[in-house]
Length: 326
Ligand SMILES: [Zn+2]
Image 1 (cartoon, protein in one colour):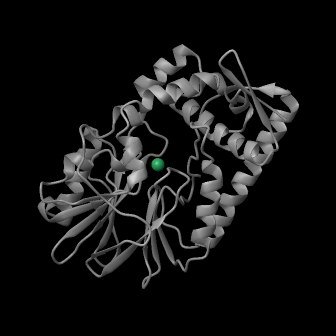
Image 2: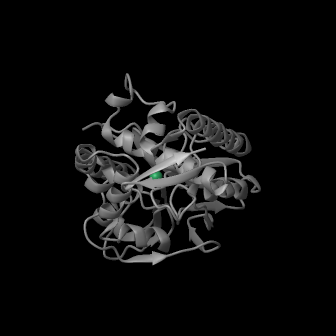
């Protein structure tokens, strides 16, 4: 097993790339902060062997003792939260947010998600395949975790850093970033990413996560930030430029989705997603890996929900299926 990539980003603050085999995200960035008394690890990777091995090698290299280490998890997705219960020692504190913990602990979650996915055009065969391959289903923590909940404005001090929690709903309802005001550092989780755009998915019809996401981007736009430490890929220095790009991306997407709905007359989210442009390595929609199809349709629904709330499109339910029209 090769050693994971570990770099010192700032004094006492390290980034370790925890590999995610066969996943287009490639790796999760885990941040390790070395303190005098206690250390802090931000995000962990998935609950799978490859992540555990990489983590152990990184801890070894940095000589960090898990018994003196606490954890902060930005959001519920398995590539951030997955490994925490494996890594945490009995003496570790695990900081998380309440809205995401409710979702992660909701035993009927997959059943509800599947019912909604079926309404939006997924076939039974695809749903079965999606369940067997979904990383959230396969690589989440097993068993309950004793979280300590944090919310907007709460502070954590480790080593020379004092972080403030910034609530940034959108990618997930409870997503928390960490802001180090004196050094203008922002640990962004999956709220702001560089080479890729964070997935904004809606499955629940009561929510409008894209609106929340755009509002959360505007909130961060106001902050003085010199360095973004994201949950995946490279570090970023120009936060305002990147936020502008992400906002433009979603406004373009909204235009694309409303044009598709207009041209189609009436279509399911599944059919609409199949006509959108995707940056996915597959020759056509039919050959998209099922998990990518799942994220694509969730993303299509998020944009459809936004347009629906704006009064641009409407929906009709027919025979248990949801269809959108201009
Ligand atoms: Zn995520």
